[in-house]
Amino acid sequence: MSSSPTRSHTSSGSSSSSSSSSSSNKEERPRFFDPKAKGLCWAKAEVVPGRHPERWRKDAAGNIVCKRFCNCQGCLCFEYDHIIPFSKGGESNPENCQILQTRVNRFKSDRDKLDKSELQGFSCDVKFTDKELDIIEMAVYGDVIRPGNECRCRTVAEMLGQYKSKNRMAPCKLPYKEAL
Image (cartoon, rainbow, N blue to C red):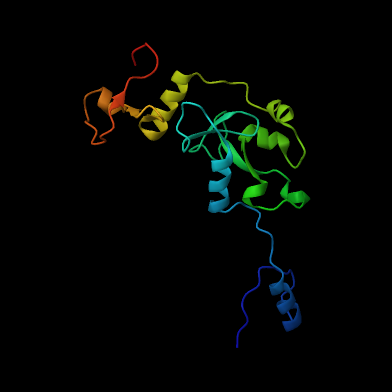
């Protein structure tokens, strides 16, 4: 009868059945958040007014981040952060998860008990206008969705007359007067 593999790795090539069974009883703590924890973490983050909540949120420091920009570098990029650092016993569960702009998360490192103003001090200084966020959303998602307005902004192809959307929701006008 074969025993199940254990999660721990030993440097020596020998193993006894007693050490194998004792190590299989110990589960290692997961270092990373699973997809369910990430989904719950995103859902509990502050919504950006006038922006689609599945695409945009505010991190714990109040920075706007885009869901498509996870684990990258940039002012709209974010990472899932352990509120109580993993190195200090923090678990990888939704209650210990927050989204943080990548730059903020890197400066936070393994510190805990930082308040919002301290996190803001690590934030990227670039702030985006609504028009710039529309352009970024158009580039990333192919359209701009405005929740609550019962409309969606036209895609670039629609604006150029190259495509007619099958989406029954009427396209809206962008909220600024300049033409694209």
